[in-house]
Length: 194
Image (cartoon, rainbow, N blue to C red; front, side, top):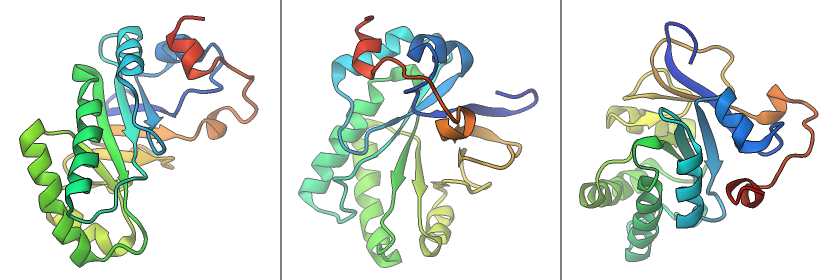
């Protein structure tokens, strides 16, 4: 966090960070994990949470199996994603969901009540939507966070040119910070203490 700001700054992933997660956690107060292909497993979440210092926040981006159609299968995918994310407990940051370019405002409007129902069932999770321009007004109108928007309940910034005032998270691509990173330990090696 920079002085006078309530924005936690970190990287999109920590792979390639010199010294792995054990060094990363000393340099940054947050990280965005990729859950695009697979939701984090319970053991890994537990080990990462234990390795992270007090005040550290884990965010995640996911998940490719979301269809943004209000179906029973969609409810199951959402419940699993949100349940797993909630395992970070007080170290949970925010979840970033990527909305498809071809998703219509009407389809999103029909899907949002399903998300709301799942959040009411499991408890709230801060979610930021990475959305195409036509969907942003609907999300902001509903009081939801939109990636790289300076309004909403919290900020979720990706590779911002500057950090505006506000509270939230800013994540940078590691290659922007470390253009030629040395090879580091894998996630499995890191959480298993190898």
